[in-house]
Amino acid sequence: MAKSIDISTSKHHLKLFENGRLIKTYPIGVGRMVTPTPAGTYTIINKQRNPGGPFGVFWMGLSKPHYGIHGTNNPSSIGKNVSKGCIRMHNRDVLELAAAVPIGTRVAIHK
Image (cartoon, rainbow, N blue to C red; front, side):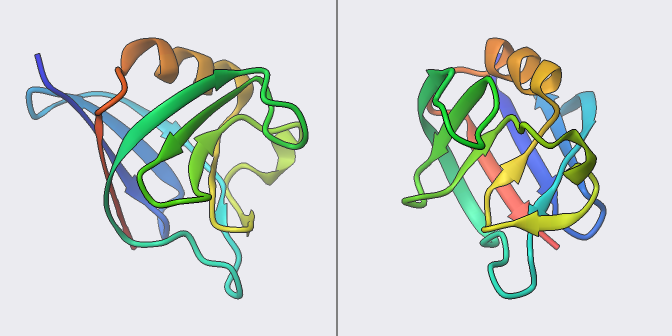
């Protein structure tokens, strides 16, 4: 069963798919105009629980260096363009997503 992630930066949502079927949609925060979330297709290359700093309870690094999907210590930032390019999620959502997707999962990011 192949899982994939589709991220819309303009709609502020992350969709989890399994074999092309939508499983769940999560609200996200994305990059500011001066530090936009990079469009493209990447893969999840690592995972870390409790990474420290502003990354909330979990970090999933992308194959685009220095970018990832992570939790946040600032839940009011979800739904906004506020990050330095990373994808922010509510802590409970990033834990659920991290448990559902393996390293190597494809992540497509677009407007």
